[in-house]
Image 1 (cartoon, rainbow, N blue to C red):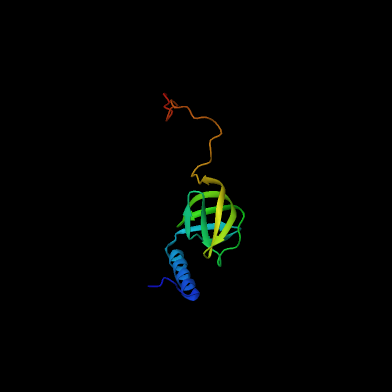
Image 2: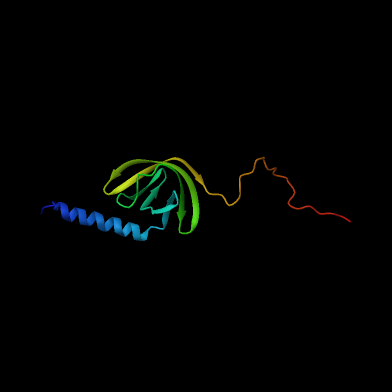
Length: 116
């Protein structure tokens, strides 16, 4: 039995895989006011469709559905199998509140009660 497949069939299989990943993905990257779908994400980076995304570089915001997940500093690392892969140079989780500029005491009061 032969395991050889013609190039056009391999290209069709790769395109079908990319289309499936794009439909299933809820991850998005916002860069310069534009949103781009993320095909897959891992600890040190993410991949996007090479045909749908420009070579991004700099700060981006990552969203899952409508939720802001993180801010990242990225660079494009390589293109492989129709995917443009990016590496994180810095990854910061999005916070609901601004960062404190002081150390919070562990025994700090929760509320203030006044006697009149």
